[in-house]
Image 1 (cartoon, rainbow, N blue to C red):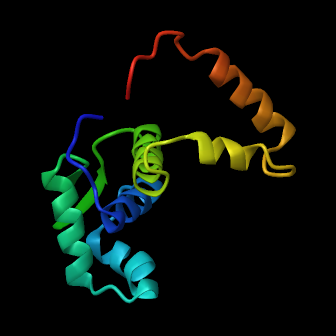
Image 2 (image 1 turned 180 degrees about the vertical axis):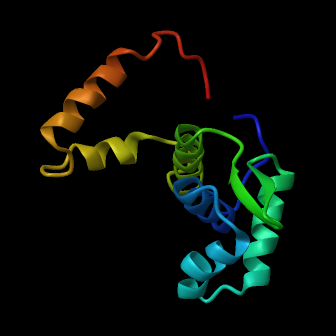
Length: 128
């Protein structure tokens, strides 16, 4: 995804919209924003910022804009993970892998899937 970077609040709103799309600003404000103490205007501002950055689109239905991700849910999740790794883990996956190696942190099914993913990585990855 070659898009502008996203702030933490933008990422969380994008995740919420992706999981509940299509959805109105009012619905996001009530279901997501109010429990966090966010005003409807704040939610609107964040969603419009995401739209201008190309992450959300909107369509008028019965006089109300309904928002949906411009990209697939899997791509949204990749962006969330990338942002987490970059911001929280200083770009290194090693602390995350160390966490995964702790007993009980991964189910047998997840371990099988992770092994397949790792085996499928290209050998010549270059630099990030």
